[in-house]
Image (cartoon, rainbow, N blue to C red; front, side):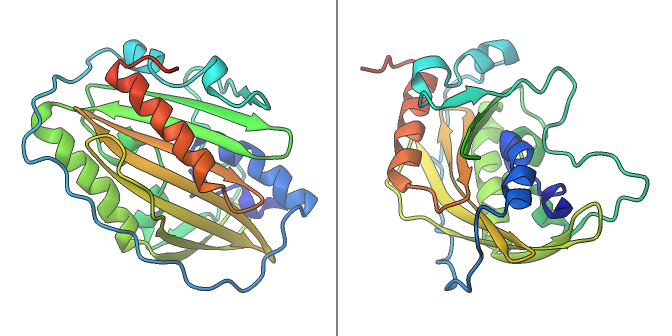
Length: 249
């Protein structure tokens, strides 16, 4: 049952997904079948010059992340509390968790964790009764560093097409990362999917990482079934409008 404890954000895995993943696996809600290989993650080119000033206050950036009516009504916010890392496995007397290659453990980590040096960062996590989750995080960087931060995140995705690991109890976990064919979001974007399998069960996630001015935002959904790309697209579009200061309908 502990096979999911060490998963970091549907690798995230992204924040809230790891909190519900153990319940998904314990309940045996999703059966794993041999699946075809996923398509490669596409490369996206960031603008050559970024002039937008970065956000420097994390509370301001946090306030721009989706909440309330922007989130489907079946989801409720997860409050992990200050100073808590929602993506870390629980402490055990003998923690045998690892990922091979080690760098691939960062897939779907918060952008600010993947790329140090953010001037502001924030994250929100939501969960539904059917074990689905929504995780959004954003990090703002100096104008000279924002494009590199975006490129660093997507380069990791292309390096980690297939990798493996174990949870804190030493149970084997396998990961597949592949591309999603989604329209461009923000100034540049890359969309991808992750399949995380253990003990014959699979959990699915899909995410878009977008550059909006000097901010890199990651929007991820996860669940026991493949994520509807339209649902991810809607969340991503609304989140980017919020970061751009555009009011929704």
